[in-house]
Every structure is written in C-alpha cells, then in structure tokens.
Length: 108
Length: 117
Image (cartoon, rainbow over all chains, first blue to last red; front, side, top):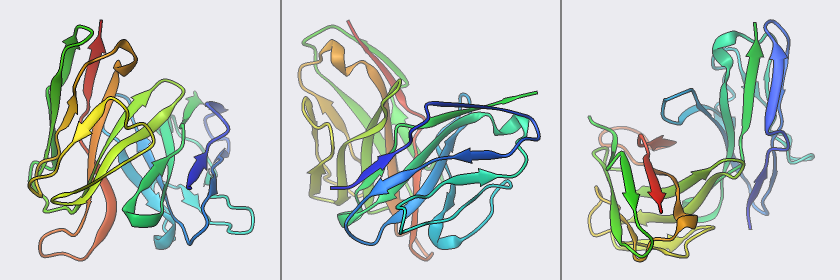
C-alpha cells in the first residue's frame, strides 16, 4: 500500500521567513514524488517533481529515501506563496495518492 | 487544447437521486482519475483508469461507478446519492501526449461542487 502523510494542516509564516512543508511517504517500491499547489479559486497544478531536481518559484524539494521524506522548502516566503500544497506519490500501476494537504499562510 | 474539462460546475441532488459527472480530456492521455476533496481529508482517489476499457478502484470507491469506453472520456456515476457524497470532485489525466515525450504531470479539471441534501 502507498501512503502520503502531511502532518501540518496549517503553516503560518511571516513574509521573508523560511518555509518548510513536510511530507512523508510509505511505499515498498521506488517512488515518484510530486508537489502540487492550489491557489485560491484555481485548479491544482504541478509545482515540482523529484526526478527533475528543479527549483520552481524558489521552491525545492529533496527526496530522502532513508527518512522517506520529500519536504518542500523555500528560503524566503512571499505573500503570493499563500496556497494549499499537496504532496503526491505515484506508485504501482500509475496510481497516484495525495496527502491531506497543508495550507500555507504568509503573513505580510 | 481545452485540457481537462468537467461538467457540471455545480450540482445539487436529493438523497437517492442518481447522476453522472462528466470528464473529458483532449491530450490523448492514457491515465485518468477521479478524486474527491473534503476539508481536512485532502484529495482521495475514487477510481482511476490506465486506458480505454481498464478501470480500477482507489481509496474510496463505494457509491461510485466508472467506465472508460474512449480515451477521452471518463464519467463518474453516482447511483444513489447520499449526503456523505457532498464534496468537490476533481478529474485528472496524465500520460503520453500527442507528439511529445511521456509526461507524468497530472492535469486537473476545474472541479464539480456537489451537494446532496
């Protein structure tokens, strides 16, 4: 079985402060991990994926297989980062499982 | 390309009524899925399909049926609506795009907000 855990429902930070959204996963095989974002009144959209090792909008995420984690980080939060963030895992047979989401609130 | 489209945007049903949520994509994607989004529960997978004629259950399939007769369409049927099915439903697709390399990005529809009274 595959499972994604996001322990924080809400994360509030001040503008300019560092951000870390936590994601832990459980999967017996080699996982493919993603972060999706949903801005207010918009569709869910891909933010980044671990295989690309990319930085999008200043966000990065590193897959730590030892700790089974894929935390999302940004050194300096911006007000426009306020949104709902979902961690997702694609496991066997294309099945994609999402976490419960973390609402990021950036305080001006 | 229209991407992933869903109809209707809003729907109110009475307990026991049936209805079909429509989902279509024009990206020639193999993989399509339905999720429901509830406060504090995140996105939960209802059913998914890896190609025409192939469907499988997700985490919360009870009360929902799906079929995949074409690559483009993946309707979700509620046979007898219950208040517990009040939610926002999202359809998503991913897979091979026409003329491009494989993409594992899931593209989401705008959602259908369903209320069951």
